[in-house]
Length: 196
Image 1: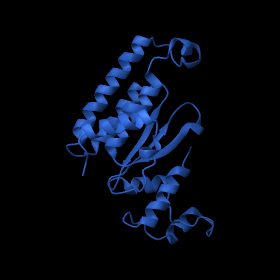
Image 2: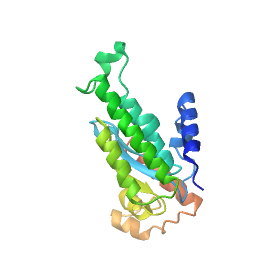
Image 3: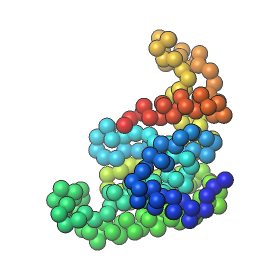
């Protein structure tokens, strides 16, 4: 069952106070509600990677409480020179952050009423429009986007070393079953291998 928006806010405020992102970001066990993102945090291909979250609401909060705040919050005066990543003034950064926060809050309020596929595209638009260097390439919400995720990362059950081609390895791999804990663990490992 999806949490209420106030529960998401309280959970993420606590996580940010304790600075314990791993509690949420590394989704302990992929489920039929998990959400996986593929993003780039900068200009280098080394900054690209995938992260799993318990659900789409946690993904929204990740951007609201952490990623966009980290990028758009105006720097302290002593950090001005090192941290300035754009030509935007502090007022412009604050305005951009406020607009993004409001859009993400609105999206979370809609999500707690029920997930719809177009919400993933809206999250991408909010993040990509608001951000300076961050780019959200893909959002995979399970189980709806499982096939697309597997197409991108490959079948985590395929033994690529045992066959001459990827196609051959995937043809001989067992079908992926999201209800199988071993399959989910293999998928989670594959997700963390992509980038980062």
